[in-house]
Image (cartoon, rainbow, N blue to C red; front, side):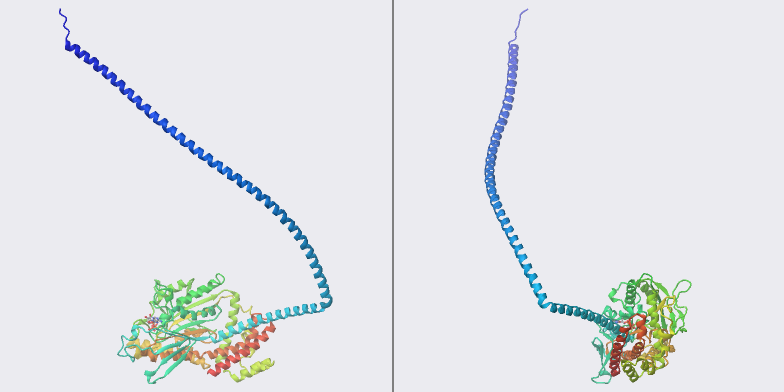
Length: 640
Ligand SMILES: Nc1ncnc2c1ncn2[C@@H]1O[C@H](COP(=O)(O)OP(=O)(O)OP(=O)(O)O)[C@@H](O)[C@H]1O
């Protein structure tokens, strides 16, 4: 069989072999290239490392160089320091040597000086010993004199204090303050047909200073005539509620001192009585209006509880009663029916056997804070009788009397207040029976100053009889007289109904009857003040329920403050003059205060005993007080 070798196959085989070889070579080349690349990379790394080593070496060289420099400078500094230390050591040695020298020298000098002083002293004692002793004696006696002077000035200060308190107390038994309200829109508006004034309100009443009001009466047919009225304090239209209360505040202290206190607002309708007593939002005096807008009642309650806070815990208890006097009837505004609804029950006023006015079955509420008081009052104020008048659309037609009764449990306070109460009753008795003669008083004082105290006091003054002295005779010893029951004083806060005339208020029918009742009770109040001022034996307290209710607060040693509220415009000039006249008459009650002053002079010894003041001081104080009282009386009499 022929052997055919296909050339194409051979070529193909060779090509295949060659391609295989070529691939193998190419793979070998690739491997070599990869190896070459790795070698290149390692070479680069080695080169980098060598470069880094070079840099590190350079840095180390630099550092070494720096170290060498530092070493060099340290060595130099150390050498300098060593030389300085050597110098300092040398200096120190020199200073120490100098100090030793100086100390030795000083010691020598001191010794020398001491010797000289000793020599001088012995020389002085030898020559002037008696002078020194004299000087010492003089110094000692001057010390004694100084001590005596100090003692005298202390006693004088005490004396002044007693005198001041007494005079303030006696002068202040009745005070009249006046408050002018600002001109308000209703001073023109409605009722202009009845108005006697012009449409543009003309201010005719003005406060000229702190204690004087002037009324321009030109339009009343007195051309160019100005009437002047003086009161203890006059508040102008710009005076705030706070300023008004500031003048009233001291009465709260008197209340806790054991005196009955009454603060009443008097004036025609719309003159600002309710604003002054309760604040303008009368039915919610504890409400959102600022405290500076509160009237005397809330502020007095706050002050009372503030004062009580300073006293021992639980030594005082405060109860509130609220009544209104309407058409000469007393209505208990705290009385409630079975359902607890306030009804304003009718009550009566009586005078007890001890001469105190009382309202049987009157409701009292125990209060523990001013907020309690105001909550109570605001809850009953809506019951108060009101009626719109031509002058004031929210006119109160009744007298509102808020009474805070304070009960004292403190026996010391009780002792003092009981003594004062006894004196008060005694003075009231005497003031009603007898009339004081200035000439006799002056004779008494002069007689007593010349030492004849006993004869003067027993012969001419009706107030000197020991039988009338509550402390000497009618009262048992002070301690024995202290009753166990708590002692009570009353703070009566009164918002009187308006004192306007019927024509001005424009009321008719039932309201006319109301107005007539209001005017009658106010005139009864005026009569009571008049009777007290004139020292009439009978004071007509019982002519009206209002005066009967306020009996304990008017006269005697009770403190009464009448706040006259006055509208400033021409339209109300007649009412304003009437109010100012009422205030002026009330002020004349100062006179019984003077009587009380002399009644008290008779009782200085008893009072001094009560307060354990020593005998020598009693004598000097009595003489001093009497002479002061006499001059105060002379001034008063001249002003009458
Ligand atoms: N000093 C005052 N400052 C600002 N407003 C006042 C002042 N006094 C009174 N007023 C305002 O005058 C108005 C009448 O005052 P208020 O109700 O106090 O009179 P009133 O004398 O109590 O009258 P009434 O006897 O008729 O009850 C009220 O709107 C009150 O806010």
